[in-house]
Length: 301
Image 1 (tube, rainbow, N blue to C red):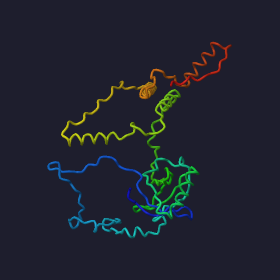
Image 2: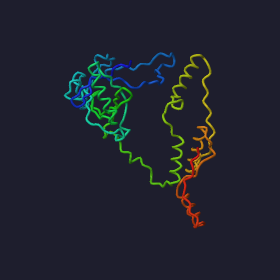
Image 3: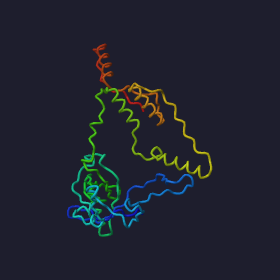
Image 4: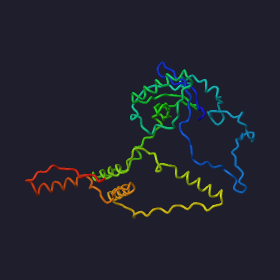
């Protein structure tokens, strides 16, 4: 059972839901320690007072705000816990919005909200079902770690999830990153859409979405522990020379995607666009008396 990170309540109008906050994710990456390579002893970071030049125990360490080099204001954890802010002890819901109205770049780490005892069971379930049936998410404010934060509450299975969010003014404007003006043809867009179709799947479960780096590190550690030869790096698959033609690169990508799914990579429709329309016009001029309904080419399986 994950440990409780924070305890408080969800404030939903006049309804209060006592909750515990627990982490919704696990870190499975391999951790390394810093060691002295000559004798493999652990290298530690020690906290030293720069005036007394001695190591300081945790009991003597606190927070301070630097007004200037000569003046630092001490602030205790007790003072932070008692600040006159409603969100210091509650996740206060302020609005309900469609999920797609929130920019995904604002959404961060996720936490499960666990009802605190039987008294919280009914209001917790009420909020969960209301969120689920409304197809909305809740936007809330809460105060952790010395600052007020914006949060998003949504439903996942039988649980309510709290996502930390960035304030709107913390998101940088991407306009300065925009590329120089350039033209993209309808044929290129169509081919890119075709590639997206070939790479579309229902979910991201399965062997294609596993942490291969962590698996490789584990194999290196096992080999060194057992005195075996280290795993060899895989030879990169042969790739064609650099393709400077965008359409050719897209078509080659579609063929590769088809081949990876066991499909016939040799069968591929011509992209719809202006060139196809031009061909249709030429055909119509050659045989004006015969009218046929225009049909889009059948997509290859």
